[in-house]
Image 1 (cartoon, rainbow, N blue to C red):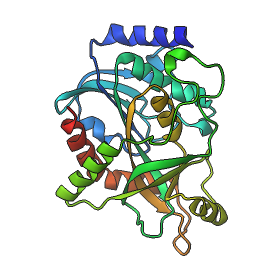
Image 2 (cartoon, rainbow, N blue to C red):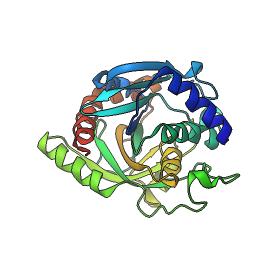
Image 3 (cartoon, rainbow, N blue to C red):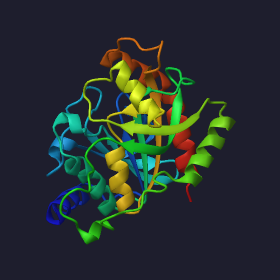
Image 4 (cartoon, rainbow, N blue to C red):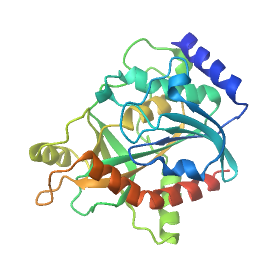
Length: 270
């Protein structure tokens, strides 16, 4: 594993001299933030040794190095999912590469289903906790270089960044929620009883990503912040048939609000 990471990092460092402090992961229908980055180098995932390749529509599959505000950043324009057939260790691999490249902060975004009755399609939810129903990415051989075998997860999402984001949203007059994200394997969407179950166990939103990446990042002491865009509803009386095209459209419509918060929040980091 360590040799594989080093090979990948060595290849990337031959392509760019950038020293990113901040990593960004852009989810389904949420690639627009890349347009805010003053891009220096763009590398296709398929050209990076040992890197997974995105197989999902709306995930361009590119690693973007550049500047956002006053910071050097690296953005993953597209992520990887358990339902694509990747192991959670493979999903964790890019996060370990980003850490080796020097990131200290990880900003994540996703499109998800709303479980909280107060949510509407197009709302933003800051993730302040999660429930993981996907195999844990830390299962398997332990490498001390990555961090502790049993990392603490009492505060996976940074409270200071959450509070700053709430204030930014208020300043921008943007509606914002906080809540718990439940990560499931997918790729099928949930049945009404499954939505009910996920709500009963404490979920405010449900999706198929993000949490394995956060677990990996927190093991390596990377500070995490995440926003979900509510693209469909799993609330009794509001459940209806939904397609991927509709999910992508809802993501793209709400994305400018998320981008505005990310831009201001990242620029505020010292």
